[in-house]
Length: 485
View 1 (cartoon, rainbow, N blue to C red):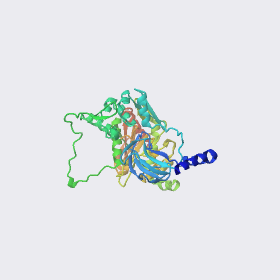
View 2: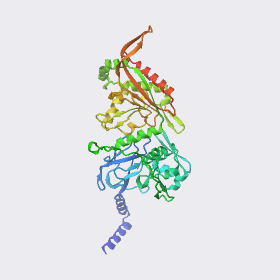
View 3: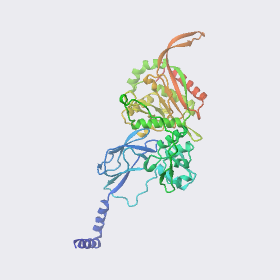
View 4: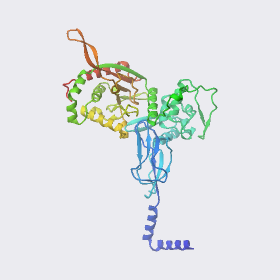
Protein backbone atom coordinates (compact mmCIF):
# COMPACT_ATOMS: atom_id res chain seq x y z
CA UNK A 1 0.00 0.00 0.00
CA UNK A 2 2.75 2.42 0.94
CA UNK A 3 4.61 1.60 -2.29
CA UNK A 4 1.46 2.31 -4.26
CA UNK A 5 0.96 5.70 -2.59
CA UNK A 6 4.65 6.60 -3.15
CA UNK A 7 4.46 5.78 -6.85
CA UNK A 8 1.30 7.85 -7.21
CA UNK A 9 2.91 10.77 -5.40
CA UNK A 10 6.03 10.50 -7.59
CA UNK A 11 3.83 10.49 -10.71
CA UNK A 12 1.97 13.56 -9.45
CA UNK A 13 5.18 15.47 -8.79
CA UNK A 14 6.40 14.65 -12.28
CA UNK A 15 3.20 15.90 -13.87
CA UNK A 16 2.75 19.10 -11.82
CA UNK A 17 6.40 20.04 -11.14
CA UNK A 18 8.44 19.10 -14.24
CA UNK A 19 11.46 21.14 -13.14
CA UNK A 20 11.80 19.26 -9.84
CA UNK A 21 11.15 15.95 -11.59
CA UNK A 22 14.11 16.59 -13.89
CA UNK A 23 16.31 17.38 -10.91
CA UNK A 24 15.37 14.07 -9.26
CA UNK A 25 16.10 12.00 -12.37
CA UNK A 26 19.39 13.83 -12.90
CA UNK A 27 20.43 13.00 -9.33
CA UNK A 28 19.54 9.35 -9.89
CA UNK A 29 21.73 9.20 -13.02
CA UNK A 30 24.66 10.76 -11.20
CA UNK A 31 24.57 8.06 -8.55
CA UNK A 32 25.02 5.32 -11.13
CA UNK A 33 28.44 3.69 -10.79
CA UNK A 34 30.79 4.11 -13.72
CA UNK A 35 33.15 1.28 -14.61
CA UNK A 36 36.67 2.04 -15.81
CA UNK A 37 38.97 -0.58 -17.27
CA UNK A 38 42.63 -0.74 -16.25
CA UNK A 39 44.52 -2.14 -19.25
CA UNK A 40 47.97 -3.65 -19.66
CA UNK A 41 50.08 -0.64 -20.74
CA UNK A 42 52.58 -0.67 -23.61
CA UNK A 43 56.01 -0.39 -21.97
CA UNK A 44 58.15 -0.05 -25.08
CA UNK A 45 58.34 -0.65 -28.79
CA UNK A 46 57.99 -4.30 -29.83
CA UNK A 47 56.59 -5.12 -26.36
CA UNK A 48 53.28 -6.89 -26.90
CA UNK A 49 52.69 -8.44 -23.47
CA UNK A 50 53.55 -8.03 -19.81
CA UNK A 51 53.68 -10.21 -16.72
CA UNK A 52 51.74 -9.26 -13.59
CA UNK A 53 54.20 -9.35 -10.70
CA UNK A 54 52.11 -8.21 -7.75
CA UNK A 55 48.73 -6.70 -6.94
CA UNK A 56 48.95 -3.92 -4.35
CA UNK A 57 45.14 -3.83 -3.97
CA UNK A 58 42.46 -6.49 -3.57
CA UNK A 59 38.83 -6.52 -4.65
CA UNK A 60 36.81 -4.04 -2.59
CA UNK A 61 39.76 -1.78 -1.72
CA UNK A 62 39.42 1.97 -2.32
CA UNK A 63 41.75 3.40 -4.97
CA UNK A 64 42.91 6.99 -5.23
CA UNK A 65 43.70 8.65 -8.53
CA UNK A 66 47.34 8.07 -9.56
CA UNK A 67 47.72 5.45 -6.81
CA UNK A 68 49.73 2.40 -7.89
CA UNK A 69 47.55 -0.71 -7.93
CA UNK A 70 49.93 -3.34 -9.34
CA UNK A 71 53.44 -3.93 -10.68
CA UNK A 72 54.21 -5.50 -14.03
CA UNK A 73 57.30 -6.68 -15.87
CA UNK A 74 58.35 -6.94 -19.51
CA UNK A 75 61.59 -8.11 -21.05
CA UNK A 76 62.91 -4.55 -20.74
CA UNK A 77 61.62 -2.92 -17.59
CA UNK A 78 59.59 -3.41 -14.43
CA UNK A 79 57.00 -0.75 -13.65
CA UNK A 80 54.12 0.10 -11.37
CA UNK A 81 50.73 0.83 -12.91
CA UNK A 82 48.69 3.70 -11.40
CA UNK A 83 44.93 4.21 -11.57
CA UNK A 84 43.65 7.04 -13.75
CA UNK A 85 40.53 7.44 -11.61
CA UNK A 86 39.47 7.31 -7.98
CA UNK A 87 37.02 4.64 -6.91
CA UNK A 88 36.79 1.05 -5.70
CA UNK A 89 38.58 -1.93 -7.23
CA UNK A 90 35.62 -4.14 -8.15
CA UNK A 91 37.26 -6.84 -10.30
CA UNK A 92 40.72 -8.32 -10.80
CA UNK A 93 40.75 -10.11 -14.17
CA UNK A 94 44.23 -11.68 -14.05
CA UNK A 95 46.32 -13.19 -11.28
CA UNK A 96 49.94 -12.64 -10.29
CA UNK A 97 52.24 -14.41 -12.71
CA UNK A 98 49.81 -14.22 -15.64
CA UNK A 99 51.12 -12.98 -19.00
CA UNK A 100 48.70 -10.44 -20.48
CA UNK A 101 48.68 -8.89 -23.99
CA UNK A 102 49.13 -5.12 -24.24
CA UNK A 103 45.78 -3.31 -24.25
CA UNK A 104 43.93 -6.15 -22.49
CA UNK A 105 41.78 -5.18 -19.50
CA UNK A 106 43.32 -6.44 -16.25
CA UNK A 107 41.02 -4.83 -13.66
CA UNK A 108 37.78 -2.88 -13.24
CA UNK A 109 37.45 0.22 -11.04
CA UNK A 110 34.01 1.59 -10.15
CA UNK A 111 33.52 5.28 -9.45
CA UNK A 112 30.62 7.61 -8.59
CA UNK A 113 31.12 9.55 -11.83
CA UNK A 114 28.13 9.45 -14.15
CA UNK A 115 28.48 7.19 -17.15
CA UNK A 116 28.27 8.80 -20.60
CA UNK A 117 25.18 7.22 -22.21
CA UNK A 118 27.01 6.88 -25.54
CA UNK A 119 30.65 6.27 -24.72
CA UNK A 120 33.06 6.37 -27.59
CA UNK A 121 34.44 2.96 -28.46
CA UNK A 122 37.88 2.26 -27.09
CA UNK A 123 40.64 1.87 -29.67
CA UNK A 124 41.37 -1.69 -30.64
CA UNK A 125 44.40 -3.22 -29.02
CA UNK A 126 47.21 -4.62 -31.17
CA UNK A 127 45.97 -8.11 -30.40
CA UNK A 128 42.38 -7.27 -31.37
CA UNK A 129 43.58 -5.61 -34.58
CA UNK A 130 45.51 -8.70 -35.53
CA UNK A 131 42.60 -11.07 -34.87
CA UNK A 132 40.23 -8.83 -36.82
CA UNK A 133 42.65 -8.72 -39.74
CA UNK A 134 42.91 -12.51 -39.71
CA UNK A 135 39.15 -12.97 -39.78
CA UNK A 136 38.46 -10.38 -42.48
CA UNK A 137 41.47 -10.53 -44.77
CA UNK A 138 42.74 -14.03 -45.59
CA UNK A 139 46.41 -14.29 -46.53
CA UNK A 140 46.92 -10.61 -45.71
CA UNK A 141 49.36 -8.57 -43.67
CA UNK A 142 48.36 -6.64 -40.53
CA UNK A 143 50.57 -3.64 -39.85
CA UNK A 144 50.86 -1.82 -36.52
CA UNK A 145 52.70 1.47 -36.16
CA UNK A 146 54.23 2.72 -32.90
CA UNK A 147 56.51 5.78 -32.70
CA UNK A 148 57.29 5.58 -36.38
CA UNK A 149 58.16 1.89 -36.37
CA UNK A 150 56.20 -0.62 -38.44
CA UNK A 151 55.81 -4.26 -37.44
CA UNK A 152 54.51 -6.58 -40.15
CA UNK A 153 52.50 -9.58 -38.97
CA UNK A 154 51.65 -12.14 -41.64
CA UNK A 155 48.27 -13.73 -41.28
CA UNK A 156 46.70 -16.71 -43.01
CA UNK A 157 43.18 -17.79 -43.81
CA UNK A 158 43.48 -20.89 -41.63
CA UNK A 159 43.94 -18.70 -38.56
CA UNK A 160 40.43 -17.35 -38.91
CA UNK A 161 38.87 -20.79 -38.81
CA UNK A 162 41.01 -22.26 -36.04
CA UNK A 163 39.31 -20.22 -33.32
CA UNK A 164 42.64 -19.97 -31.49
CA UNK A 165 44.15 -16.69 -30.30
CA UNK A 166 47.75 -15.76 -31.14
CA UNK A 167 49.57 -12.63 -30.01
CA UNK A 168 51.40 -10.51 -32.62
CA UNK A 169 54.72 -11.59 -31.07
CA UNK A 170 53.92 -15.27 -31.66
CA UNK A 171 52.78 -14.55 -35.22
CA UNK A 172 55.96 -12.58 -35.94
CA UNK A 173 58.20 -15.40 -34.71
CA UNK A 174 56.19 -17.96 -36.66
CA UNK A 175 56.53 -15.89 -39.82
CA UNK A 176 60.29 -15.47 -39.40
CA UNK A 177 60.80 -19.18 -38.70
CA UNK A 178 58.62 -20.31 -41.61
CA UNK A 179 56.02 -21.97 -39.38
CA UNK A 180 52.63 -22.27 -41.10
CA UNK A 181 49.37 -21.61 -39.29
CA UNK A 182 48.57 -25.33 -39.52
CA UNK A 183 51.82 -26.18 -37.74
CA UNK A 184 51.27 -23.38 -35.22
CA UNK A 185 47.81 -24.77 -34.44
CA UNK A 186 49.37 -28.11 -33.45
CA UNK A 187 51.71 -26.63 -30.82
CA UNK A 188 50.61 -27.27 -27.25
CA UNK A 189 50.10 -24.00 -25.40
CA UNK A 190 50.66 -23.37 -21.71
CA UNK A 191 48.99 -19.95 -21.60
CA UNK A 192 45.49 -19.09 -20.54
CA UNK A 193 42.86 -21.26 -22.32
CA UNK A 194 45.66 -23.17 -24.02
CA UNK A 195 47.18 -20.06 -25.63
CA UNK A 196 50.57 -20.53 -27.29
CA UNK A 197 52.99 -18.18 -25.55
CA UNK A 198 56.27 -16.89 -26.92
CA UNK A 199 58.12 -19.30 -24.63
CA UNK A 200 56.07 -22.22 -26.00
CA UNK A 201 56.96 -21.32 -29.57
CA UNK A 202 60.66 -20.75 -28.87
CA UNK A 203 60.84 -24.09 -27.05
CA UNK A 204 59.13 -25.78 -30.00
CA UNK A 205 61.60 -24.20 -32.47
CA UNK A 206 64.59 -25.20 -30.34
CA UNK A 207 63.42 -28.80 -29.99
CA UNK A 208 62.55 -29.02 -33.67
CA UNK A 209 66.07 -27.90 -34.60
CA UNK A 210 67.48 -30.69 -32.40
CA UNK A 211 65.19 -33.27 -33.96
CA UNK A 212 63.39 -33.77 -30.64
CA UNK A 213 59.78 -34.91 -30.66
CA UNK A 214 57.55 -32.12 -29.40
CA UNK A 215 54.13 -32.16 -27.77
CA UNK A 216 51.39 -30.87 -30.04
CA UNK A 217 47.67 -30.25 -29.91
CA UNK A 218 44.86 -30.31 -32.43
CA UNK A 219 42.58 -27.29 -32.67
CA UNK A 220 39.03 -28.11 -33.70
CA UNK A 221 37.06 -25.66 -35.91
CA UNK A 222 35.07 -24.64 -32.82
CA UNK A 223 38.23 -23.46 -31.12
CA UNK A 224 38.26 -26.30 -28.60
CA UNK A 225 41.79 -27.60 -27.97
CA UNK A 226 42.05 -31.36 -28.00
CA UNK A 227 45.20 -33.27 -27.10
CA UNK A 228 46.79 -35.14 -30.02
CA UNK A 229 47.99 -38.72 -29.57
CA UNK A 230 51.50 -38.65 -28.07
CA UNK A 231 54.41 -39.53 -30.33
CA UNK A 232 55.85 -42.97 -29.67
CA UNK A 233 58.71 -42.90 -27.17
CA UNK A 234 59.49 -39.15 -27.36
CA UNK A 235 63.07 -38.20 -26.64
CA UNK A 236 63.62 -35.95 -23.61
CA UNK A 237 63.95 -32.24 -24.42
CA UNK A 238 67.15 -32.07 -22.40
CA UNK A 239 69.15 -34.20 -20.00
CA UNK A 240 68.30 -33.48 -16.37
CA UNK A 241 71.01 -31.80 -14.35
CA UNK A 242 72.68 -34.22 -11.94
CA UNK A 243 73.99 -32.66 -8.74
CA UNK A 244 74.59 -33.37 -5.07
CA UNK A 245 71.55 -31.82 -3.37
CA UNK A 246 73.27 -31.83 0.03
CA UNK A 247 76.05 -29.60 -1.27
CA UNK A 248 74.10 -27.47 -3.75
CA UNK A 249 71.75 -24.53 -3.58
CA UNK A 250 68.83 -24.15 -5.99
CA UNK A 251 68.01 -20.52 -6.80
CA UNK A 252 64.85 -19.75 -8.74
CA UNK A 253 65.36 -17.20 -11.52
CA UNK A 254 63.64 -13.92 -10.85
CA UNK A 255 61.45 -12.35 -13.51
CA UNK A 256 64.16 -10.08 -14.90
CA UNK A 257 66.65 -12.94 -15.26
CA UNK A 258 64.08 -15.10 -17.07
CA UNK A 259 63.24 -12.28 -19.46
CA UNK A 260 66.91 -11.50 -20.13
CA UNK A 261 67.54 -15.16 -20.88
CA UNK A 262 64.61 -15.26 -23.27
CA UNK A 263 65.73 -12.02 -24.96
CA UNK A 264 69.28 -13.30 -25.45
CA UNK A 265 68.15 -16.63 -26.93
CA UNK A 266 65.74 -14.79 -29.20
CA UNK A 267 68.54 -12.54 -30.46
CA UNK A 268 70.75 -15.51 -31.27
CA UNK A 269 67.90 -17.12 -33.20
CA UNK A 270 67.20 -13.91 -35.14
CA UNK A 271 70.64 -12.60 -36.17
CA UNK A 272 73.64 -14.39 -37.65
CA UNK A 273 76.16 -13.30 -35.01
CA UNK A 274 79.80 -12.61 -35.90
CA UNK A 275 82.34 -10.81 -33.69
CA UNK A 276 85.43 -8.91 -34.81
CA UNK A 277 88.10 -7.54 -32.45
CA UNK A 278 90.52 -4.63 -32.83
CA UNK A 279 93.13 -3.03 -30.55
CA UNK A 280 93.50 0.69 -29.85
CA UNK A 281 96.31 2.69 -28.28
CA UNK A 282 94.44 5.07 -25.96
CA UNK A 283 97.43 6.51 -24.12
CA UNK A 284 96.45 10.01 -25.23
CA UNK A 285 92.90 9.53 -23.96
CA UNK A 286 94.16 8.29 -20.58
CA UNK A 287 96.38 11.36 -20.25
CA UNK A 288 93.48 13.63 -21.26
CA UNK A 289 91.11 12.25 -18.61
CA UNK A 290 93.81 12.31 -15.96
CA UNK A 291 94.67 15.93 -16.72
CA UNK A 292 91.17 17.43 -17.07
CA UNK A 293 88.84 15.31 -14.94
CA UNK A 294 88.87 17.67 -11.93
CA UNK A 295 88.33 20.80 -14.00
CA UNK A 296 85.63 19.10 -16.06
CA UNK A 297 83.65 18.05 -12.98
CA UNK A 298 83.96 21.46 -11.35
CA UNK A 299 82.79 23.20 -14.53
CA UNK A 300 80.02 20.85 -15.66
CA UNK A 301 78.92 19.12 -12.46
CA UNK A 302 79.48 15.62 -13.88
CA UNK A 303 82.36 13.18 -13.55
CA UNK A 304 84.62 12.65 -16.56
CA UNK A 305 85.06 8.96 -17.38
CA UNK A 306 86.15 7.06 -20.48
CA UNK A 307 82.63 6.01 -21.49
CA UNK A 308 81.52 9.39 -22.95
CA UNK A 309 84.57 9.32 -25.22
CA UNK A 310 83.71 5.79 -26.35
CA UNK A 311 80.17 6.93 -27.15
CA UNK A 312 81.31 10.11 -28.93
CA UNK A 313 83.86 8.21 -31.02
CA UNK A 314 81.29 5.53 -31.92
CA UNK A 315 78.78 8.20 -33.02
CA UNK A 316 81.37 9.83 -35.29
CA UNK A 317 82.15 6.44 -36.79
CA UNK A 318 78.48 5.47 -37.25
CA UNK A 319 77.97 8.60 -39.34
CA UNK A 320 80.59 7.21 -41.75
CA UNK A 321 79.16 3.67 -41.66
CA UNK A 322 75.34 4.08 -41.45
CA UNK A 323 74.72 0.41 -42.26
CA UNK A 324 75.62 -0.40 -38.65
CA UNK A 325 72.88 1.96 -37.46
CA UNK A 326 70.07 -0.05 -39.00
CA UNK A 327 67.46 -2.77 -38.54
CA UNK A 328 66.26 -5.69 -40.65
CA UNK A 329 62.56 -6.02 -41.50
CA UNK A 330 62.07 -9.17 -43.55
CA UNK A 331 64.00 -8.56 -46.77
CA UNK A 332 64.26 -4.81 -46.14
CA UNK A 333 67.10 -2.89 -44.48
CA UNK A 334 65.97 0.15 -42.49
CA UNK A 335 68.84 2.61 -42.13
CA UNK A 336 68.21 5.11 -39.33
CA UNK A 337 69.12 8.73 -40.05
CA UNK A 338 69.33 9.42 -36.32
CA UNK A 339 71.35 7.82 -33.54
CA UNK A 340 69.71 6.75 -30.30
CA UNK A 341 72.64 5.35 -28.37
CA UNK A 342 72.07 2.60 -25.80
CA UNK A 343 74.55 2.13 -22.94
CA UNK A 344 74.30 -1.12 -20.97
CA UNK A 345 74.12 -0.67 -17.19
CA UNK A 346 74.79 -3.54 -14.77
CA UNK A 347 72.50 -3.59 -11.74
CA UNK A 348 73.34 -4.74 -8.25
CA UNK A 349 76.58 -4.61 -6.27
CA UNK A 350 78.43 -6.99 -8.61
CA UNK A 351 76.04 -7.09 -11.52
CA UNK A 352 73.83 -9.65 -9.78
CA UNK A 353 70.72 -7.53 -10.35
CA UNK A 354 70.69 -8.06 -14.10
CA UNK A 355 71.37 -5.73 -17.00
CA UNK A 356 69.37 -2.92 -18.56
CA UNK A 357 70.07 -0.68 -21.55
CA UNK A 358 68.82 2.90 -21.20
CA UNK A 359 68.96 4.95 -24.39
CA UNK A 360 70.43 8.42 -25.06
CA UNK A 361 67.94 9.89 -27.52
CA UNK A 362 69.37 11.89 -30.46
CA UNK A 363 72.88 11.36 -29.16
CA UNK A 364 74.30 12.48 -32.51
CA UNK A 365 73.14 16.02 -31.69
CA UNK A 366 75.05 16.18 -28.37
CA UNK A 367 78.55 17.27 -27.50
CA UNK A 368 80.77 15.43 -25.02
CA UNK A 369 79.33 17.27 -22.01
CA UNK A 370 75.75 16.41 -23.02
CA UNK A 371 76.69 12.78 -23.53
CA UNK A 372 78.43 12.59 -20.14
CA UNK A 373 75.42 14.12 -18.38
CA UNK A 374 73.00 11.76 -20.10
CA UNK A 375 75.07 8.70 -19.22
CA UNK A 376 75.33 9.69 -15.55
CA UNK A 377 71.61 10.51 -15.31
CA UNK A 378 70.43 7.29 -16.98
CA UNK A 379 72.85 5.08 -15.04
CA UNK A 380 71.76 6.60 -11.71
CA UNK A 381 68.06 6.21 -12.50
CA UNK A 382 68.63 2.66 -13.73
CA UNK A 383 70.28 1.64 -10.46
CA UNK A 384 67.55 3.32 -8.38
CA UNK A 385 64.74 1.86 -10.53
CA UNK A 386 63.50 5.25 -11.66
CA UNK A 387 63.74 4.75 -15.41
CA UNK A 388 60.67 5.54 -17.49
CA UNK A 389 59.47 3.23 -20.29
CA UNK A 390 60.62 5.77 -22.89
CA UNK A 391 64.16 5.63 -21.46
CA UNK A 392 64.73 2.07 -22.65
CA UNK A 393 63.19 2.04 -26.10
CA UNK A 394 64.09 3.29 -29.55
CA UNK A 395 67.81 2.45 -29.45
CA UNK A 396 69.66 2.14 -32.77
CA UNK A 397 73.13 1.07 -31.52
CA UNK A 398 74.45 -0.19 -28.17
CA UNK A 399 77.67 -0.03 -26.18
CA UNK A 400 78.54 -2.47 -23.39
CA UNK A 401 81.60 -1.54 -21.35
CA UNK A 402 82.74 -4.80 -19.78
CA UNK A 403 86.12 -3.22 -19.13
CA UNK A 404 84.71 -1.71 -15.94
CA UNK A 405 84.85 -5.20 -14.41
CA UNK A 406 88.39 -5.80 -15.66
CA UNK A 407 87.62 -7.95 -18.72
CA UNK A 408 89.85 -7.51 -21.76
CA UNK A 409 87.30 -8.33 -24.44
CA UNK A 410 84.15 -10.33 -25.04
CA UNK A 411 81.56 -11.28 -27.65
CA UNK A 412 78.37 -9.36 -26.80
CA UNK A 413 74.93 -10.36 -28.07
CA UNK A 414 73.11 -7.95 -30.37
CA UNK A 415 70.29 -5.95 -28.77
CA UNK A 416 67.34 -6.57 -31.11
CA UNK A 417 66.19 -5.07 -33.41
CA UNK A 418 69.59 -3.47 -33.84
CA UNK A 419 72.27 -5.01 -36.06
CA UNK A 420 75.46 -4.28 -34.10
CA UNK A 421 76.78 -3.84 -30.57
CA UNK A 422 80.17 -2.49 -29.46
CA UNK A 423 82.07 -3.90 -26.52
CA UNK A 424 84.90 -1.98 -24.85
CA UNK A 425 87.49 -3.79 -22.75
CA UNK A 426 89.69 -2.77 -19.87
CA UNK A 427 92.48 -0.27 -20.49
CA UNK A 428 95.78 -1.85 -19.45
CA UNK A 429 99.43 -0.86 -19.78
CA UNK A 430 101.45 -3.21 -21.96
CA UNK A 431 104.80 -3.23 -23.72
CA UNK A 432 104.14 -2.40 -27.37
CA UNK A 433 106.45 -2.34 -30.39
CA UNK A 434 106.44 1.07 -32.07
CA UNK A 435 108.13 2.05 -35.32
CA UNK A 436 109.99 5.37 -35.21
CA UNK A 437 110.23 7.87 -38.05
CA UNK A 438 113.63 6.49 -39.06
CA UNK A 439 112.13 3.01 -39.46
CA UNK A 440 113.63 1.50 -36.32
CA UNK A 441 111.48 -0.38 -33.80
CA UNK A 442 111.35 0.27 -30.09
CA UNK A 443 109.47 -1.31 -27.18
CA UNK A 444 107.48 1.19 -25.15
CA UNK A 445 104.80 1.11 -22.46
CA UNK A 446 101.37 2.18 -23.76
CA UNK A 447 97.77 2.12 -22.51
CA UNK A 448 95.97 -0.38 -24.74
CA UNK A 449 92.41 -1.64 -25.03
CA UNK A 450 90.44 -4.11 -27.15
CA UNK A 451 87.26 -3.20 -29.00
CA UNK A 452 84.90 -6.00 -30.02
CA UNK A 453 82.04 -5.57 -32.46
CA UNK A 454 79.27 -8.15 -32.73
CA UNK A 455 77.23 -7.65 -35.89
CA UNK A 456 74.43 -9.21 -37.90
CA UNK A 457 76.08 -11.09 -40.76
CA UNK A 458 72.83 -10.99 -42.73
CA UNK A 459 73.60 -7.39 -43.79
CA UNK A 460 77.09 -6.62 -42.43
CA UNK A 461 80.13 -8.40 -43.84
CA UNK A 462 83.50 -8.82 -42.16
CA UNK A 463 85.18 -6.19 -44.35
CA UNK A 464 82.63 -3.52 -43.45
CA UNK A 465 82.90 -4.38 -39.76
CA UNK A 466 86.69 -4.30 -40.00
CA UNK A 467 86.76 -0.83 -41.57
CA UNK A 468 84.30 0.37 -38.93
CA UNK A 469 86.55 -0.86 -36.12
CA UNK A 470 89.73 0.57 -37.63
CA UNK A 471 88.07 3.96 -38.11
CA UNK A 472 86.83 3.84 -34.52
CA UNK A 473 90.33 3.00 -33.27
CA UNK A 474 91.82 5.98 -35.12
CA UNK A 475 89.18 8.28 -33.64
CA UNK A 476 89.95 7.07 -30.10
CA UNK A 477 93.68 7.36 -30.72
CA UNK A 478 93.24 10.99 -31.86
CA UNK A 479 92.39 12.13 -28.33
CA UNK A 480 95.27 13.61 -26.35
CA UNK A 481 95.81 15.86 -23.33
CA UNK A 482 95.47 18.95 -25.54
CA UNK A 483 92.06 17.98 -26.94
CA UNK A 484 89.29 20.48 -26.21
CA UNK A 485 86.28 19.28 -24.23
